[in-house]
Image (cartoon, rainbow, N blue to C red):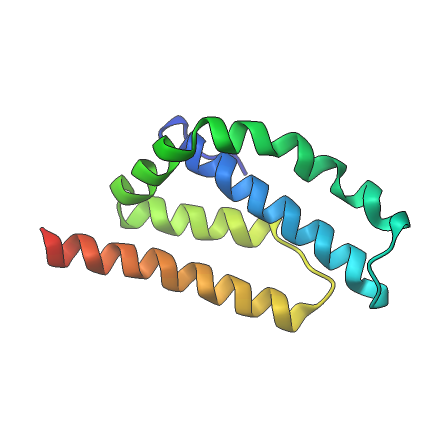
Length: 111
């Protein structure tokens, strides 16, 4: 799934978080974080620069996102985020849904 251009910077931030989460999840599957797990973090390292470069724009994109955009972002996250620890994955996905819902409520309340 690709995000539309209007959500690119926010997508870069989500990609970094997803990549780090997946790397930690994979690394902790055996219950121990060791040197051999370092290779799991190669992809997240490559995603740092785009996330930082567009960080403020990404926050603005999150604020400007309408309900359809927020649903698209939730689906994007759920598709790409995959931890071996299903219970932790579910909690993180629920937290993301809460954050996007909170943004929607704040926008409604603030006008």
